[in-house]
Image (cartoon, rainbow, N blue to C red; front, side, top):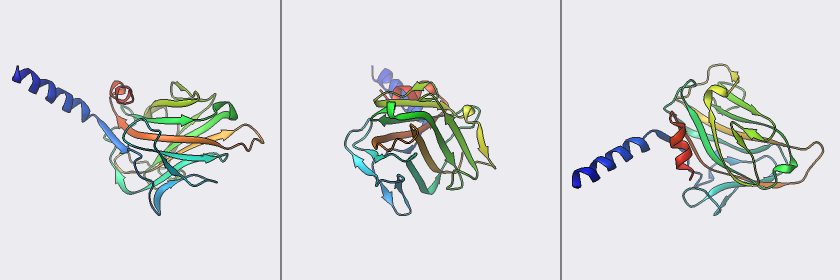
Length: 193
């Protein structure tokens, strides 16, 4: 019996190690390494999917959430075998025009040493955004916008752009939680439940 329990614990631990967490979104960070939203201060929200908080912004500007990290992060994946996942809350997806971009980089910028994933039709990867929390899982191989030479062993930048309908300046709350990487899509899906 004890051997079976130990074996299960070892298997669970081994599987848990396959997920690398970039940000649990439990803190806003300190300048200049803090969460930012164009047109609105970010704040901690106790409405979350993991841990005790998520990061929230309330703006009509496209740049909903962005963070530069003070230390580089090794995702533990390659572009060919890796996935990025996070929980994304969208208050009113009907106000969005369906376009946006997810960007990660190793240069603290979206325009150098970066991977960008353009999404349209309110779809990020296979996730169609709905009002409320969405579990987003995207294969890094689908990031088609590549600038220079991004290094997945040294990520220090994350950004989400979501554009409003033309001429619409209505603000809405967007939240993010639990940003992570893995080579195992099923692990990322399981962590979000």
